[in-house]
Image (cartoon, rainbow, N blue to C red; front, side, top):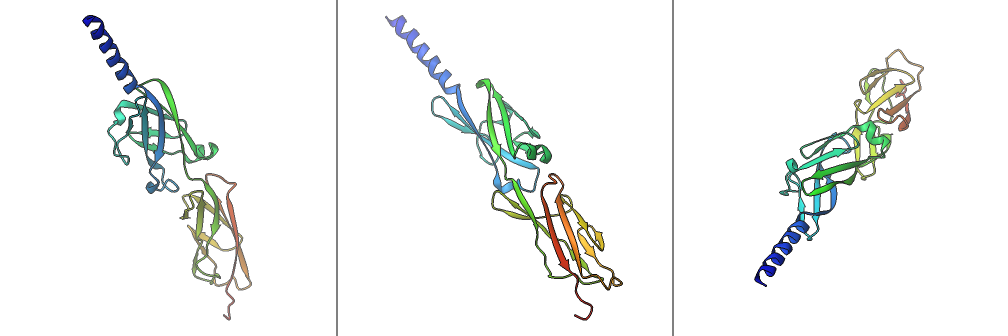
Length: 211
């Protein structure tokens, strides 16, 4: 009888240990304060739920103790390095801003997946600082991106390209020469480089010479 109880106790202990190590689900999150709308290196974290109800988290911004060196993470877009996703913007757009992570570790007998949905650039727009161009002066073409997160950020020439009907482009500045006396307005187009379907158009009046 004593021998039977010992064996039973050992089996129950092994069962409990197995349940403790069995991963039931994984949730992936990103650090929104890292501005994924603009930057391509994004901290991520994992919530790892075990069969016994325990939930552990990864180091980094989640401040957990389930170390990254115990886990293999393979994203279907971009690359992963020690708690950071390195984004491939064009690939991200083609996947509707959703990255699927394939995760394996010693506690996961078969690989599991978790999705991260990043903020989407919904549209771009011009937001002018002045209501008209003045000949001989640089006019900054200010463009903003409007994201699904509700945030609005200025975009520079690393993200958008410009075309103008008249004048000269100097980076993101538009310059109209003093000798263009008959010019009344300039049309400008901004195009998001990673997705040319996103465009913004504007017409900027040219200040009259006698004003």
